[in-house]
Length: 267
Image (cartoon, rainbow, N blue to C red; front, side, top):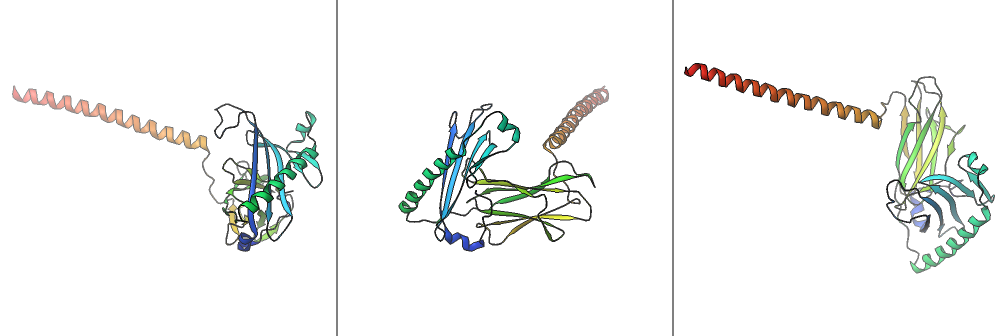
């Protein structure tokens, strides 16, 4: 399955990757910008192949409004539900996904020949690291590492704590395709915040000349939540409006006082 055990060979990977074929089939109204409030169920599949390696990697999943419902472990021929509860209400035969992938692999071979084996463009990821909930010292939490906007879907994510690799409890998700044909991937690390500890999410991708590390520790200020930003903006706007009103009132009073003084002076 794509994303499990795929090595990233650094800059040399640029010459190895030839072409990526992405197939998106939306069930419902297929359009780039769905009508606000419209719900979209999507079947998403992709395959990719390198010139030096005849084997290919692939992925098959169903999404609802860009959230994964399930993906198929193509090697184990098993449907993996994002939440186990989903599997209690419906089912999906993994063999159907294998048939779709076989068709995509055949189409990919044709496209590679027609393009004269033109290399794909490597787009590096943007990486963010943030806690799942507001941080409280010594209270269990989860660090989330998000790699976004990259292509092709060949990317490694590892965690480091105080300079040493961490693997216990780490969960790295599959690739999430986006409408612009780039990808997003998440990795989760359970941790207990401590002021003396620092963590880093290390990302490797063919679009990067070297690995990219994003560091997080409890002393790094958290970005303001959207609601807080809105409150601050609204408060600033309100203060500004009050200042304008008070200033206008003072100007009117000052002008009236000046006119009254002028009349008294002429008399």
